[in-house]
Length: 265
Length: 304
Image (tube, rainbow over the protein chains, first blue to last red):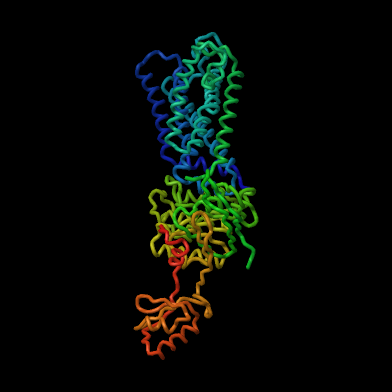
C-alpha cells in the first residue's frame, strides 16, 4: 500500500522547510569561504588548491557531522515533543517503515551536505589558487602516484561511512529512546566529542580488547591509501566488522523501541 | 440495525498494576454520531489511542470494518481519520504543506481533494501561511481537514470543539451530522461539553474509571408520547397535593411537586388537583439534560 518514496519525500520536506537547516548550510559555506580567504590574505606559498581543499574538507566533515547529529537527534524526538507523532503514526504505514523513511532522509542529509561542501570548496579554492589537477605527492608527502580526485573523494567516502555507522546511528538511537530533542542532541554531541578523547586514552592501554570499542575504530581515514602518519596495526576490514556489529545492535534497539512502545506524548 | 463498523470487545489496558481501561465493550454503527463521555482521567483518551493503534491493548480486541487494529493495522487504520487530543501540526510549515504531508501517506488523494477539504473547513484564505501563525480554532479546522481528507469510514475526534468559537462549534456540529447522515461516516467524539454532545450525538457512552457505566440513545425529537417522564406541577399547596397523589410517589420541590408519569396520566392528575381546589399555576415536562444524567451516573464527580 502506497509508495515508500513518498514517505522519504515527507521527511525531506520537514528537514528542508526548517530555517535551521539553511542556517547550518550558511554557516558551513561561510566558514569554508573564510578559511580560503584567510589563507589567501596571509599570502604564503600555496602548492596548489588541493592542499587547502583537503584541509577544509576534513574540517568541514566534522561540521557536517555536528549538523547531522542535530537533525538526527531531533528526527524522532521532535515528533514526540511537538505531538505530531500521533498524527504521523495513524496512517496506513507500519511503524518500521516510518522509522526507515526518517533514517533514509538522514543519510541523504549527510550526503547532500558533504556534496555541497566538496563542490563549494572546489570552486572557491580553484578561483583563489587556480584550478589544477594537482599531484598526490603534495598531499601525502610521499612518493606516490595516483589521482588526487580519487584520494580526496575516497577520504570523503570513508568519513561518510564512519558517520553513518556511528554518529548518525547513535543520535538516531538516542532520539528514539529518550524521545526528547534536547537530551538526545546534547548526549549525541557529547559522545561524538568524547569519542576522540576516549580513543586517545584507550590507546594507552596495552590490552587486545581495547580494539573492540566502536570509538577506537570510527576513524576510517587512517586507512586512506598513502595516508601520512600511518600507525594502524589493523586492517580496514577489522574496523568495519567491529563497527558493523555495533551498528546492527544500535539499529535493532532503535527499531525495537520505536515499534514496541506506546505513544503517550 | 446494520452490522457494526467498529467493535471494541473486552478492551482492557493495564499499565503496571493500574487498570486504566477495564473490559470495555462498544459497538458503533455506520452513520451514527457516537459520544464518549467521562470525567477527566476516566480513560477516554486512552481508549482513543488504542482505537488508532498508538497504544497496545493488554486484552481484548478492536476491529474496524472487520480488520483488527492489532493484527492488520494498515488495513484497519486506512478506514480511520482522527485527531488525538490537540491537533498538533508541523508549525514551521504552511497549512497546505501539512496537508500535502498527510496526503502523500494515503494513495489516491489528489490536489483537487486537498483544495476541496480546505474550502470545506473554511481555511482558503490562510492555508499558505505557516501553522505557527494560526489560532487554536484554525488549527482545529486544519486537524479536521487532515482527518477527513482520505474519506474515512470512521472519524475519531477527541474534544473537537476545544478552542472553537460558538459559530465554529455550530458549523462543526452541522458538518459532523451531515457527514454521518449523508455519507454514512461513523463519527466518534469525546467531549466534556455535555450540552454539545446532546445536540450532536445519536448515542452516548459514559465511562468512569475505565469502565462503561452507561450507554444511551439520545432522542433528537424528544421522548415518545407514552414514555414515562418527570413532570413538575407548580401548585399553591404542595403538601395537600402530595397527600392527594399518595399512590404516585410524588416529591415536594421548591414551588410545587414532581413525579414520574406519562402524558395522559399527567393531564388526569392536573384535573384531579384542580377539582380538589388546589391552584395549579402550571405543569410541565421536565427533561433531564445529559448533564444531569451524567452527574447522576458518575456520582457527581466534577467534569472538566
